[in-house]
Amino acid sequence: MRKLNEPEVRKQYQIEITNRFAALENSDDEEDVNRNWKNIKENIQTSAKESLGLNEFKQHKPWFDEECLGFLDQRKRAKIQWVQDPSQNNVNNLNKIRREVSRHFRNKKKAYLRAKIEELETNNKIQNTKDLYRGISDVKKGYQPRCNIVKYEKGDLVADPHGIVARWRNYFSQLFNVHGVKGVGQAEIHTAEPLVPEPSASEFDLAIDKLKSHKSPGIGQIPAELIKAGGRTIYLEIHKLIISIWKKEKLPEEWKKSIIVPIHKRGDKTDCNNYRGISLLSTTYKILSNILLSGLIPYAKKIIGDHQCGFRRNRSTMDHIFCIRQILEKKWEYNEEVHQLFIDSRRHMIQLGGRSYIRFSLSLVSLGNL
Image (cartoon, rainbow, N blue to C red; front, side, top):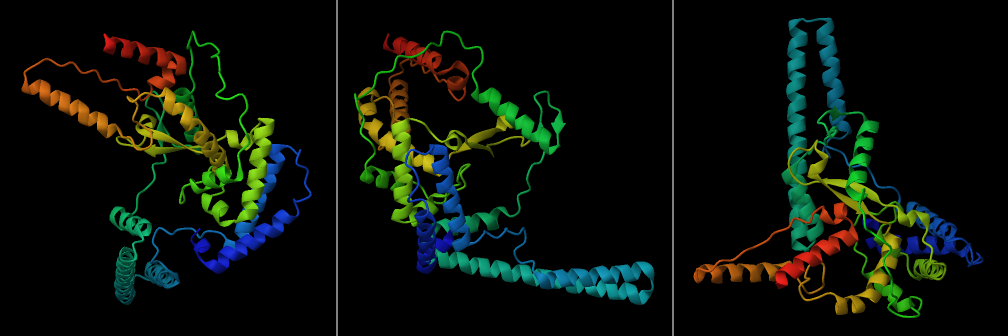
């Protein structure tokens, strides 16, 4: 994605996109949304591959090059020669080559670290904070081995790749799916307006501007940078797709899927309960989500009370924490009793279900009012 910052590469990518989408100008607007999305995705991916190329695999030891590989082969041949003929000359020759190889590797690693420090200094001077902190993290943490085993519910270890995938599927299925919840009926839905107009071009542009860069793409494998750098051609094609979705009230099947990535929090790395699942959604789906969110925010502000600070613009839960601390300090100062109730709702919302959790929360609010 860094190549998109170069004007020539960016222009070549836009030309490639325009040429490929020119063949879709005569396509039928009534075509299935799944087919339209497939054409858009394939054209973006092919244009990016032709203009930007593929990302090179990151080596574990970046300083290890062909010269180091030659030294390893030389040491290997010396060792084979010593095994075949364990004479004193071969022993001395093997020890000499080992010292040379170790010395060469140390010099290579020192040169790499020296260049890395100079790169960090340069990023600090030009205020490139993203690459600066990423470089500091790489140097500080070093190599972090992956944990290739997980535990079953009963504590048995599994190392088979298929068994690991099945264990994670079972874990997230139990976590996200609600079983045995009774009394959950169909909620009556009231529309905010009798007719909601189609997203305009300005709303669409604002939704794209809200997309965050340097984020992992979902199942569509299209980062936000490719959409932003594609110019008006991509904007118009995706806008037409969203208008078609808006009219037909039908999403592409791929937009309904997400990739769940487990992120380790703390504790035993083989225990699935010590991980937090992050869902990677399709980037183009986020454009539609931003449009819907912008339209719902004015109505949500009238419904949500002042007590809600989390996930709201210009509000923070730190305000509530400050109020709680002030109350506790004053109660302690005047030697008065105070009762504080803390509820860990980390999984209650999932396990109880939406409506059951709302009833439970309302009961707590009514108790607080008493």
